[in-house]
Image (cartoon, rainbow, N blue to C red; front, side):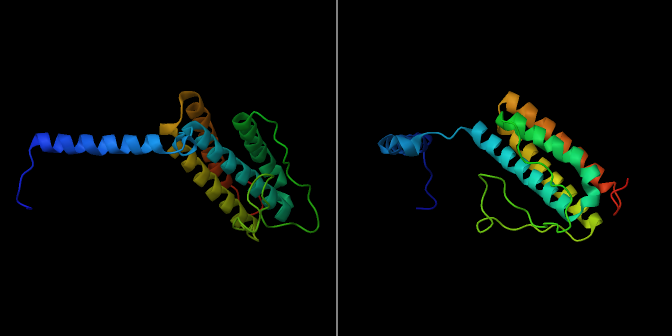
Length: 183
């Protein structure tokens, strides 16, 4: 049977039967399972989650290393602007004021997974390592936006490309700082 050749007609008929069967099976499913997920909405949701994560990471870093506040505040503000552009709502999370007891773990933004369901990220103890961690997070977020570009509609793709470019610039700026936060 392995040596038997199939005719072109048999292959086409088999393909037609399989496709027809799939279409009929799809039509018999409840509409809630068939409804297509809007790819643009899923892409936007990923970008919002990444921006919220970066804002939270900047806040945790400033809480751990208050001496970096002046350097990180403008970068964090740009992530706030990204959130506003993505959601259409004013951003609410601000960098914490320096305190004696710095909170070093990431706390999720409202609507994000709770600490019990989300992995805890710890801000490194040294400022240089904290800046390097931020740079890595910026690069990872930019890579995510770039991966989403081909599937995004034009308007969202332009916004994602702009956000990714900004994140890569942030990574380069963060890599250029020494442990004191000075360039």
